[in-house]
Image (cartoon, rainbow, N blue to C red; front, side, top):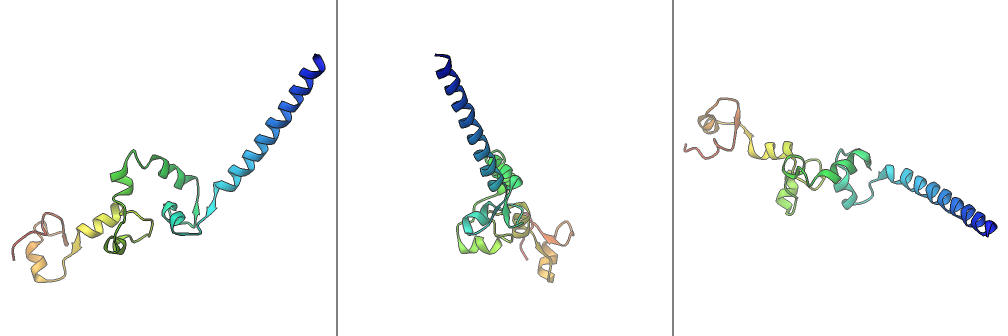
Length: 128
């Protein structure tokens, strides 16, 4: 009886050691995955060419602050034109670039109520 328990214990230790080493190597491989296609490129938040720990952390918590971090998903070619970092999302900086345009002529200058050189969302509906 003792030898069976000892054999089972030894087999369990070997199995756990193999599983731990295999999972550690798998985690090391997954730590930095090179971006190979469009789907992985959308997961590459900081555009460094790898889906790393930062990207997975942001992707894992994106549902908590979707409007702040991710913005709306890119679905059409027109939206794709405004997706400057090509990650598949319209982020805060890209949204700002869409909703604020520079004052370039006298008509825009008439609409620029706060004289900051940008036409914001509230100023875009002014009458000339």
